[in-house]
Length: 146
Image (tube, rainbow, N blue to C red; front, side, top):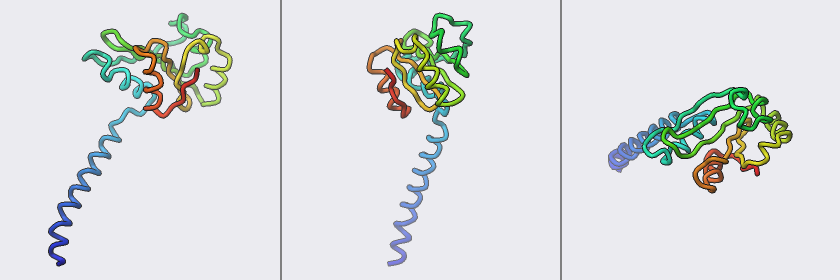
């Protein structure tokens, strides 16, 4: 009887260990920052075989993008497909409170829908489909701000 438990128990234990290692490796390889997560969402599969690029910009370089919001951000990154397709602006602030204050005072940000995640947010103005923002936002566990 004990031999049967060992005989069947070892393969089952090995399968469980392998499954656990696979899950751990997947978790460790997931994007960690908001801009990385947005790039992964935008690039899969919308970029037509290309990848999503991330371009860090300063507010002064892009006065056409939310001029009353971006100067208050700690970082601003434009996430876009290499060959056309969706584009999103990712902003990160020093704290969630700073994000809330910046959005409360920004008239240009109110004209767009945003996904807020902790101390960061990304816009949905130029995503391909209207439902993309809600879908992307739920995948990063954010809240859509309209």
